[in-house]
Image (tube, rainbow, N blue to C red; front, side):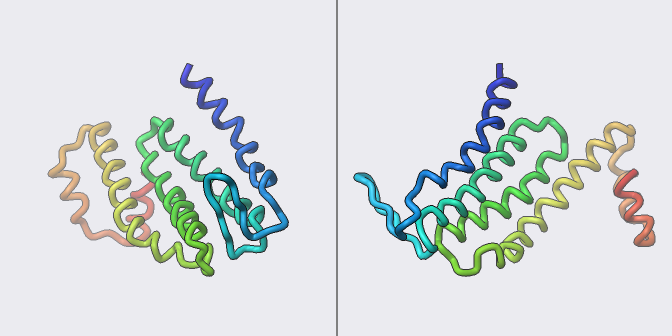
Length: 154
């Protein structure tokens, strides 16, 4: 049941992307009886093209994040947060679209990467039957950069 719903949600994602074509292409202002949107982009259709270009990947990454059963699924938050920062600057109609998000990503990655690595270490520690004293002792050993890199993939 849930698998069919997820497949349907993924299958309709291209239609979400092309929704921008239903917006007016001759004006920078779009008025409805509920709200008015004014943009600094060439026209409303271009603005919504950018919006759907950010919303659809967020939508798909969220689907992937919530349906993934692997231990590493938290790392999906990295590209997801990039798209969210880009969407935020687009909604605020910032002139530096897709330029400064990497600076906002640095603190996110400083937290996310070590957490994911520690989850990995804990899982593999339990699988291999090691205790945490041995694990901490192993972390304290002096190793070359190459040894540390190869240790990440064992």
